[in-house]
Length: 498
Image (cartoon, rainbow, N blue to C red):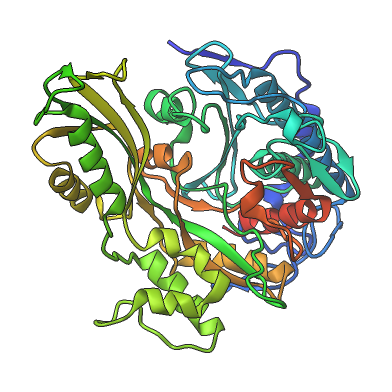
């Protein structure tokens, strides 16, 4: 059984009592899920008034304390080294305790859970004002990928704040979002705000490896903690992309390609390297790997990717139907310019050979050779992927899944996506929100086992020239303070309106 226990030695009571204002109601008695904003309409629902104590910054209940805390918490979490080197070599517990103490300070009762000692997860629930409404999951992972200090211009685990920027591993993936959630929840406690829906906060271990000690463990062993959750928000969405001067896009993730990591094995006849060998395992494997690497996967457009292409084209003054017969999709993507990077990797399945292993001596033909392939599948493309691999590997090479996770897709024409979009555009009226499908995957895959539909939504307003993608797992990872401030405001608005 997992080590499941509540946080000890952290203050309780006072913050909870402060949060006991009347159902998060605004001062004028109006209430949209406990939301207090500036009168904007979201799907016909009016959000009015100020927060319970009358405070307001940009139409939200985010105050100066929240703006300071999001920076403090981002820096503080970065300073806790949670590098995940794979194979179980990681310890998230200090970061989990850091987060739990701050949740407890907001009157919540966080629970710490472990499948493996030191690989700690945190879950807490905020009670909403509408018991009939489905719950919402907001989750972030605590682990990060390793960092080689010699390659960085700062200590990657310093959390240094310099020139309006927070530096360190996890600044964009994803301790920034972890900190934003903490800052928002604590602001709600100070101002007596409660959301309409129950909000379940989950901080997970092991996302950067297999998730078996994190979201997989929570979904499989503790599903009751997520009772009622139908939708989830997490990383990799609502950040600024500047494809051309004067244009700011905010892609919200409404899908993920599936994971299909493969192991290929070829068997043959071992023998001397000087003699002919028609059953050479290395030759058989090499031929299969070449076929897989060179295969041109056909276009398979999902609803999310189709919507993304259509909206990107409209911003260029083009009216298109990407699914129309005879459409030259590659030519169309060329017309989108740099913005095409949002969809290029997700219009089809993919298979990239990554590792080869065979033999033990140059003049000995081995009887066995292995290779590994990073495969990804679009939603609905799993059967085609398997059939194609059967054909490409041929009769002499066996393939199997080394790791497999489902592809995901979320609606982009409903209330939830509309609120997520409005919340970003409220704080950046010149920005354009578009849906997109992630080429890789997140913990949303594991939580989907519980029937939770996931969106990537960790809002950041980034300046032109700030290359978010290159900093993701990259050297000198960092996030502007202003981007964190934008994020807490947007997240606060969205969570209270959902």
